Image (cartoon, rainbow, N blue to C red):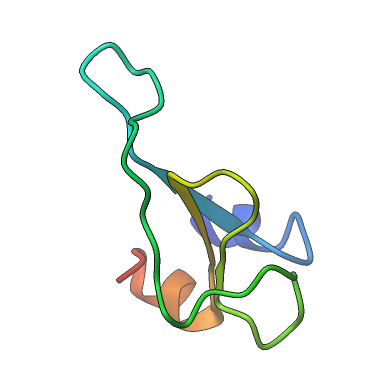
Length: 69
C-alpha cells in the first residue's frame, strides 16, 4: 500500500506545523535556511506565507525507507 500511495501524485509533500495543545496555530514561527517559497523540482523544503508551517517534499529514498528524516 505504501508504494501505491507514493505514485498517486507526481509530488508528495508532508506539512509540519507548530500548534498548541488545543491544535490551534502556535504564535512562534519555524524556519529552515534551506527552505524556498516555490515548489520546484530540486526544492526539498518549502516555506510559504504561514510563519508556523514548513512543507517537506518526499523523495524516492523516503518511500524506500518507509519514513521521512
